[in-house]
Image (cartoon, rainbow, N blue to C red; front, top):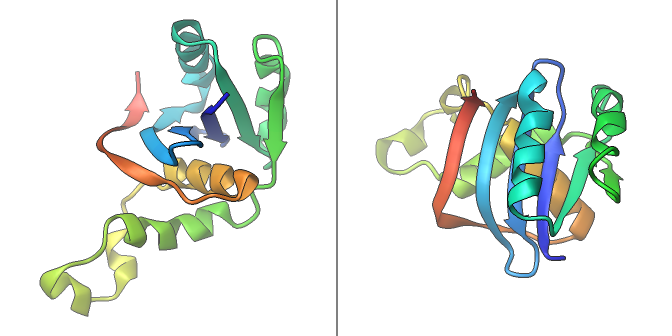
Length: 145
């Protein structure tokens, strides 16, 4: 199984990244309301049943692990320490500041960004010890309904 769904669980929202670890490509990066996470993952799992599921071990993970174990036979629980902090750095690797923006402090460009999907990416990259590229046709959404 080379396709992975990585989850950065949170109380109000969760970051989800879908990637192929053999190709080292990210195909989807979304931020979803926490109450919609299980429905979203069940739908993904029904479409394609050969995913590995990886979830960060943060404080909110315990609420999701029991429910995920009902339809995910081998749920991987991974370390997520500092993933949100590191997501800020990863953001600028993926979306570098160009032109005049490069003269301003980087922090002002991420104040309104939801970095949960990038935190899920970092959890996955750390666990599998890889670095992924973003597909040119990556699907990104926030607060899926």
